[in-house]
Image (tube, rainbow, N blue to C red):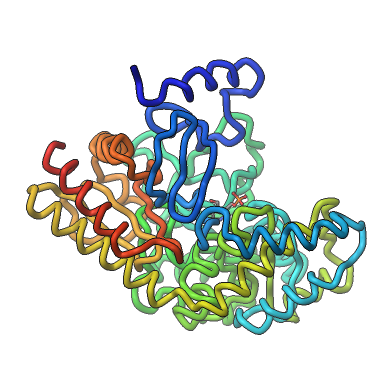
Length: 432
Ligand SMILES: Cc1ncc(COP(=O)(O)O)c(C=O)c1O
């Protein structure tokens, strides 16, 4: 009998009423099919077949304090007992915003949204209003949500289909995307400042914003080359363009001040989500006062019935308070580095071309003979079928990793768990 039998039955039932059996496209690609879970506690998650996994997906990143953190749950419970949503303000919103303003270098004014995708769109609207220009410049392989104007350039039918570096061909991620959204952006390979410079020289009159993930977490977990983020900052200053950091993953993961503190480059606007809310739907668009003024003055409209509900703000406030009190970052970096080193050594022993890349609290594994990766184009030179076999075999042995090779470390993972994952990887790599 399959170890995923009960999940399979539930998936058949789900597929009759949930389109594709899931509520988000990515959940289809679990191993060996979409799975159903019954509980999550700390670093472990249990599926309905009672398989227990050491979880390095952390639900695609949000669960920085692990599953079901007691203090987060207590805060949500006690705060939402009094009320859920007021179509009005409540005091914890101010407390959370004050905290973000104190921690995040670019956060002078803040608005709360529900998720990363809508927060990104809010930042675009502000940048357009402030500059009077229409387009944004973005980078191949960077994921900024699932909405139309950014659902390009994150998948490609073949490496050749990408076209030249100077004039890349961006492919839509989905059918049904409004074709005219292709006119809203210019796309370039990442980590190539000269190319950005040249493009802005020629087209800065049309460009309202440059948006980047400060670390390209969504493809290869590639870090910026020296001077790249600083160079973007200088170019945006020169041309009066908004620099937007999409910190949906890096926020609260690289430190309390996000990637902007970690790399010491302050954007004009930035977007926080995932780890800020421990699994509750909360995100923030934050910015320097002059950039957020259009929202402050109702020149730009930002709205949402469900924004800053009591449970989501309580979840975020408790998460940030725990992170601030416990300061788990040194530990998360050390655990991540230990795991990265262990995996690299295991691969060397087994003569496997596993490439491990990232800062530590999140990192990526793929199979390639490249010694360095710089951009999305490099990530297409990896052996995806082999990665799929690796991730599936790890999963069958109780180690849960995101299918595209991304690993997240939480504040509650232990050294023993890291060593268990390395040991399991050794077994898998030996058999691969
Ligand atoms: C860097 C980045 N930006 C934006 C998003 C979109 O966020 P959400 O899924 O909360 O809409 C994601 C989601 O994975 C992301 O990784």
